[in-house]
Amino acid sequence: MLGSVDIKDHMLKSPVVISPDALLSEAVSSILRHKISGLCVVDNNKKLLGVLSELDCLKGFIAATYNSGNMGKVADYMTTDVDVVDVRENIINVANDMMSKNQRRRPVIQDGQLIGQISCRQLLYAVGEFSSNASYA
Image (cartoon, rainbow, N blue to C red; front, side):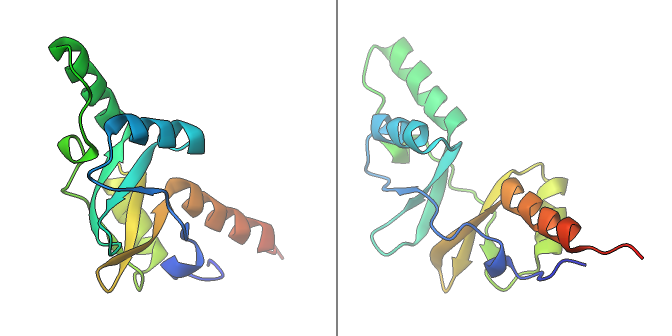
């Protein structure tokens, strides 16, 4: 069994965020600078509005290329139908649900505000901690 099954003990506590009003080019720069595959889109009160993935950004780039225009804003391309995790949820249940839906990450919410993110990487770290602490008798 894992040392802790609480999401709060394994989540990324400071996910990279962006405003829905930001230019898509800013989002691309942030994704590349932070070497991540997506951003959480939040309002001024840290309320999660959606997520923006690398694929969303590519869609914007392709659309701008075909339309000979600029890429527009994050709000134009972000995904708003997002599965989230409450901070009180069990990491095993979340991992199973993420696998069943083929999802790599989920924002973590507390009282309606974004407080973190859980991803496959954090889940693997949790398993690694368990494996390195396991004793086989």
